[in-house]
Image (tube, rainbow, N blue to C red):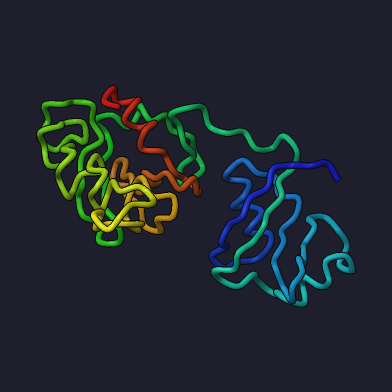
Length: 212
């Protein structure tokens, strides 16, 4: 079988066709999905016979259970990464970071607290680019620009960093609830360095806004 792109995901409950549809929305033509079971990998090969996929079907006869880690393999050449400064939204579209300027905002973590307007205007009080404003200051606890704060702390740290491995940080590669990007009232993705689905790296956003 030709080598395609692959990745580790956590599936949120659904059938293999639903998994293939969700993968397709992200530019992946699904070739196979694999799960660790009994100390070995068991796979479902898309388009293969029921006999080939029997072991996988025995594990998940109706739907893949929620929160199961899966390795998915995509068809060769089916994955086209978004251009620099762009990301694929939760709805499957591709948006350039610059197009968020003056049109989107950030909500923090599971509480969905307002943590700034996505704007390159350094004079706007609620802009993430205003170094003197609470949402753009490197010292504010509600700013993703504060690399010692809950929304801007990176992985690693010391006893002097109170938000070590923050789960709401845009710069944490392990954060489960990074800041949400809201465009026209719709949650379209996350501002995050974790590289998961529908994420825009914060450095790419600030570069697009002209305030790196």
